[in-house]
Length: 478
Image 1: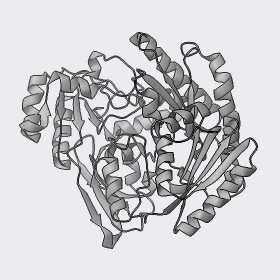
Image 2 (image 1 turned 180 degrees about the vertical axis):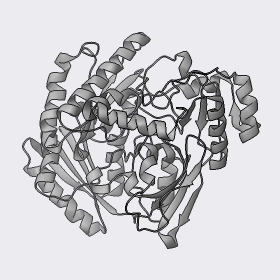
Image 3 (image 1 turned 180 degrees about the horizontal axis):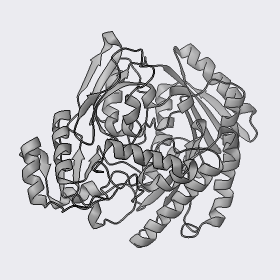
Image 4 (image 1 turned 135 degrees about the horizontal axis):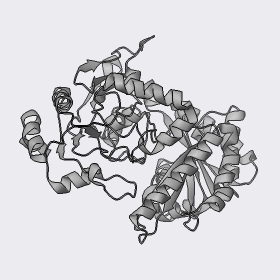
């Protein structure tokens, strides 16, 4: 699926793209091009990562014209919202690429009488969330990158971020339809404006969650969800494994599922509580954000979870938190961990391990106690543990020494991804938060097999015969 063609010059692309989107919405400035080649992973840039041009369309029609041009000239196109991918998915993989930034498509329209809201793909997730909250509605997702991530990227990956899938579902469960541009330039609309979703074929599912391989989402429509009341259940435990046990018991004892089910190891929790001006943690932290249609219902649900917390082995202390200000500070402890861990410490790498609920305790024990013995490059680098145990996933993060060579950093990231792959397969999970392509293709092929991988390649070929759109990601290029 490699494109074999003459690479167009940056100057040629500049002139041709100006004719489509206007002079002010395209640049071949080297600093902009390098900025769009970067992502959060600590890789040095290679020539193929730096695009020839950056273009910012404002409509599906402009996206269509760009893709028609790209097919005609066999020019690869990589699409980005804010480039927050943790698996090297948002950087170009082919020389001479066009980077298409969707940020100008950022409109929001509320259709309250029909119970849906529409937004452009470039709408910032936080802005969309705040818009809904201001009208009494709830955004069913909360990625850690929401301050800069876009709705197009979120829907393309089909991620809800921190939330518990079993409670809230995935974005595809709430998206009624999308406007999408196919890799060959056709514009189609999927789904419905009814709250009754299509039975049978629903083309929406070809594009939500397929990570920009089958088309570019330019607009999406979601049904409206009333904002719930929230009460927190907080618990402290002697060991990380005890927190895992507590969240396992929420499921086995049929307690109300939380909206968030968060875990912080004691070291990580102290970093967060120090930053937020809270007392130091008394142990490893379990934090459940518990919803209800009313405050009283949320409180009763939180009390049931708190009872499970209290009765779990290793329990030190627990409490119910109803005060909104304290809730916000406690959530800030969890939500700011990635920023706090990486601040001033140089490059980092983090992994997401998906786990069958019944194996949460065993997996966390292996990650904490056994994996460090098997590491090579990362063996002397501290590992920090946290994550969404209520959703069946956990994170490990390493901050890499600044003095390491780029090659050593790349090898460290590969080693971390291998740990992720090994444990996620062993404990029957999946990557539920960060997507599957680019850095995670080895996991996908081993987890689901070569026949499944071949099926995706055939789908890609059918939608994108010239392999124009986001080439390299499905092949596993980093």
